[in-house]
Length: 238
Image 1: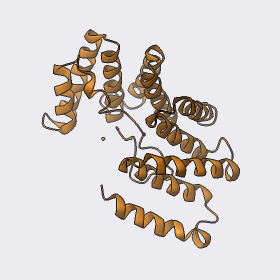
Image 2: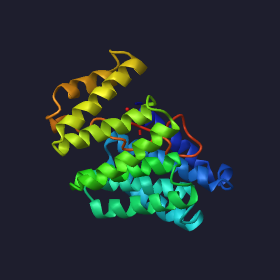
Image 3: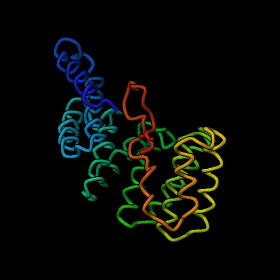
Image 4: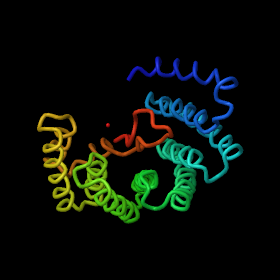
């Protein structure tokens, strides 16, 4: 997590835009989004929000409202709004991103799945638990079909769903899902992996909602194109 070095390198790259990036606006904007996401990881949410709001305006103007990069920016901006408690703005941004992805990429595209998950996180934060459950279940079914039950992305959504059941005080399904996640993490990564240990700890005390946000998919590491060795971050996702 050498964030300052990463920002320094990004700033150097972005400074060359007039000479290098003029013909590749989408890549230039993806790099700007990377910078905003580093701000987010640093906890500099105000800086991330400002960067993404400016970037969203530029993307709409230069790429159009349904360009993949524009939609990914809206998805990222919605996540920042959610984290800052700006729920109305978050919902508008995420719904716009999801609608655009469903139309241009298809409902089953991984980016649409990621945005659907982020919308579920928002609804959970608002107490709209039934709506959140529906979105988590839809995303989980999609990932199980596309990537298999043992894929880390699928396990991340399962974990999100289990936390939601805890919030709903549906402890029996929460415990069942947590046990499945622990078993799958153990098989995938071994009993001493940090995710396995965290899931096992939570599974032992399913009534404790203090662990609830640990594995949220805040950004699905498929957030930019080209990918920068990132994809689906489990709280982008982890």
